[in-house]
Amino acid sequence: MTTATGRGLAAARQVLPNGVVVISKEASTVAAVTLQISVRAGSIYESSDRVGLSHLVARTVDRGTSRLTSDEIAEVLDARGVSLSVNATRHVMTISCTCLSEDFEPLLELMGDIAMHPAFPADEVDKRKGEVLNAIRQDEDSPAMQAVQALFEMLYPDGHPYGRPAKGRLETVSKIDRAALQQFHALRFAPATTTVIVVGDVEHERASSVSRRVFGEWKAAAGPEAVLSHPPPAAQRRERIIPMMNKVQADIAYGFTTVVRSDPRYYAYTLMNNALGQYGIGGRLGDSIRERQGMAYYVFSSFDANVVEGPLFVRAGVNPSNVERAIASIDEEIRRLATDGLTPEELADCKQYLIGSIPRMLETNQAIATFLNTAEFFGLGLDHDLRLPSLLDSVTLEQANAAARHSLHPDRAAVVVAGPYQR
Image (cartoon, rainbow, N blue to C red; front, side):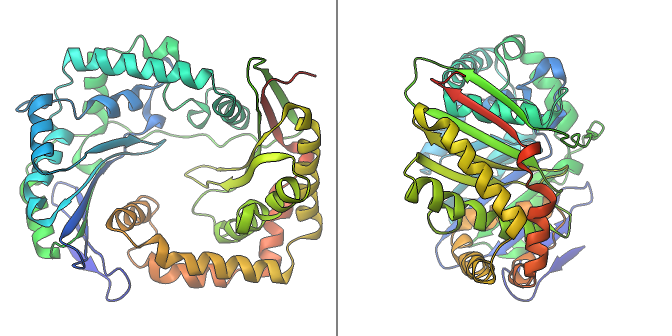
């Protein structure tokens, strides 16, 4: 069955008989098309002794198939001036590229071959594993990366998948072999876990028929879905210092867990977070800590609701001599927002900014494909782009302030400082 929307992005959705979901959006302004194959094969499906497995699969899945070598894949891409990317998040792995519309069919065939029949050549696995291990060492030498990772471990303790490092750890990645990659692929890559997105100068009917030809005969059964526990509610403030005395800058990560993506309060949290650390030059945080006090090289907040309660966190880079003042200022802005709330003017400004940014957010085929992919994953509907402005505009001042009161408690915050700083 195919469904379509009549306005807005006017995307069409079809489920093939084997379970593959195909979503297409026609855009004929340029003769190009963005392709995404998204599979529910993110890091939440790793075992605790194979942390980093999904990331390593993403680094090796396109390095050869049962019919093409890595060099042959590169030749196909180079001949068409196309770059292929593979990225893994907590929940999904996405293979994507943008190509000329005349190359749509051969590129989707190639991407399908990569998704369904990867070879994981031993020499490529060894090479990519070495690169990942080097990247992990670089992260271990970065105050910003260390602060964020430690914060997530505090927010999601006891081995929770959200608290694990996406690239893995040296001791786990070093033990991952080709057989582990093959096993992960066999468990997670299947029609029922796969969504194909086609955005650009391709008609819905053609996108559907070519996707059916490429994926329609695929038969594979996915392993069981991961069951995620909810993070424990914070009862007290937690702090951690990571001394890195050979560095120049100290990085602060400060945060809370909030709500799931399906929570109706999501849009109130989005507006509240925009006021806190995004609007203009960084919201209240940027205005106070960076502009008026001149204490931070950067400061912002981020809100990432997910399948389980996602984080709202603040990041700041400061001179080591300003660490305690900066944290005190973050505490003050968090406390003031929770106690006094947003002003009507702030809420109106944030609504205008976020609603006004929607057209810019959907300017490119790549951006539209990612938007549709996210909408499909969270079950937001094909008309989410049409409903989004009203969902934001309908948030009341009390709802935005209730979100702040519910989650912003400095006495329950998790705080990490990494860099040339000690108490």
